[in-house]
Each structure stands twice: as structure tokens, then as C-alpha cells.
Length: 309
Image (tube, rainbow, N blue to C red; front, side, top):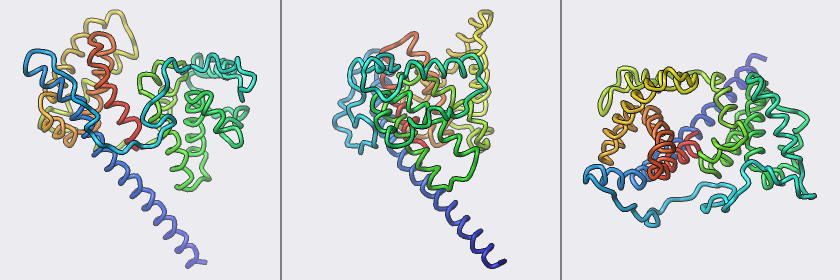
């Protein structure tokens, strides 16, 4: 019995190590791909900043990168795509009444942000034979369900590492299929759900970058990021001026990094997620003030969300 228990423990440890190795390998590939996107997206803006004028966007067709799997291939969603699935139910061939499902989502999430339990009444939309049809007619509604499905499996237990990785990989494939801003602006609370479940994952202090200095003082930036996040969530009118001042400070940090590709890579190596925060912050700023910068910034976030495990 003791030998059997030892063998089982060893097999479990080997399986966990293999899962970690797969995740680490995927992360390395994703980060390498991300740096290629960074250079293409940011270099024209950096040249413009140095020259004091507007730069011409580089021809991205020259960048030969493998395209990870997504619903739409490299082309992305078609024009005038129904992200909210508002009109799907008008077809008599629809597998679900997505407006009815959204009414359920609105009732359980918008007014009660603690309820992100998987709705068993809609389990058929993530199981075959209807799962593929559901994703085809309402990908973001299906993505929301897939996020809940993954965390339901993770938190309840009973699934092995390969099953959990398959569920997570499917979520990431769907995330990769859409621009991050389209997901954020849709009516489906996908990012709300991901944020809700974030405490399910143990914090990793190695990503805090406390005491890490170089291109920036990353510990100081983390404190600023926490203040900015609190201000944006609270949306206090009295704090509007403070938010503007803080966003200008954060923007200055970003443009310190932006000027040279070598500095961009150094910043990413020094504090990976601090760098991603700066990019995400500038997506928000560009959406409201300098919309011509939004496409390159958004491309970075699309890569981060779609490729980083």
C-alpha cells in the first residue's frame, strides 16, 4: 500500500511538473512573439516623439509571425459583427435565446457582483453537440460561459491538469479571437468575471518588482498603479483632478520607455507586468484623448491577453 501511495504521489508530481513545463514553454513563446509586436507597434510612435512630428506606420506585412488559433484566423471578426448577440435570436435556427441568457447575466452579476457561479441551466451551451454552434452564433456569450466553466472546474476540483489546461486553452483561444477593447465594450461581463476569480490564484510576489529599479522605479510605479485603479473604480468627482495628474505621471513613465526598442525590451525584462500595466493604462488614455494611438497600444494588449498563459 505504501509503495502504491508513493507511486501515485510520484505520478502526480510528474504530471504537475509536465503541466508547469508546458505553461512555461507557452509563456516563453508568447513573450518572444510579444516583443516582435512591440517593435512593430511602438517604433513609429517613438520616432515621431523624437522627431517632434508624426511618423508613418511601418509595414506590418513584413513581420512573419505564426498566427495562433482563433475563431476567425488572422482576419479577425467581420465588419459590423454582432458582439452583443442582440440579433441572433431573430433566427429560427438559433441554439439559444441569447437576450434571455443576458437577462439572467444582468440579474445575477450587475446587481449582485458576488454571483459568478456556473449556470447549470445553460450547461448545454458548452457541451456537445451544441457547443460549437453556440460559439459560432454568439462567441462572446460563449466565452463568458467558458470562463465560468473553467473556474467551476478549478474550484470544485476533480479534474486533472490536462483537463484544466484544455479548458483554459479554449478560453484563451476565444480571448485571442477578438480585440481586447471589443471584449471590454461588449455587454458580456467577461473581464468582470476574470477579475472576480483573480483571488483564486495565489499572488506571486516575484511579479511585484519591489526594489527593482532600472528604466523605472517599478515598486513606485506599482504603488501609483494601485492608487490609479482605486480612483478609477471609485469614480469620485472630487478625485477627477487627482486622477488626471496621476495619469500624466504614469504617461510620462510610459514615454520614458517608449523612445527606444532596446528600452522597451529592458523594461519588459525588468518588470513584465509593470510594463503591461503601462500599456493598458495608455489604451485607456488613448481611448479618451489620443485615439490615433489606440490601435498600436491595443495590439499589444491583444497579444498579452491572447498569448500570455
